[in-house]
Image 1 (tube, helix red, strand yellow):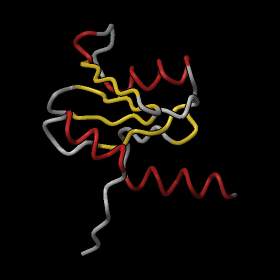
Image 2: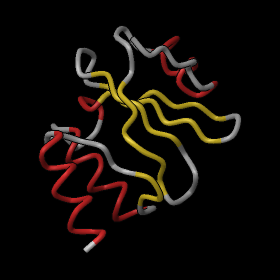
Image 3: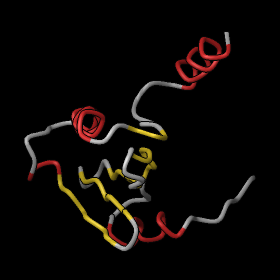
Image 4: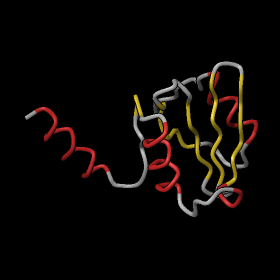
Length: 98
């Protein structure tokens, strides 16, 4: 079993969320986004600023709506890693390399 160390950003997200956070991606402004499906909340970490956003407090009902909004506002430099399956990931990788 492979064990990896949590990044400093992931440790911050773990402290704010109930469950282990799921890495969503890094937006165009270099902010890391982490998701907790149990809380339905996103933690956004940029430099020394941290924001926990519960989707219920936004006009969005689903994480995909959050990622679409982020795409429109800032773009994504990494990700977003939302939904899909390993098969989808493999197809996307093959298409990108073709």
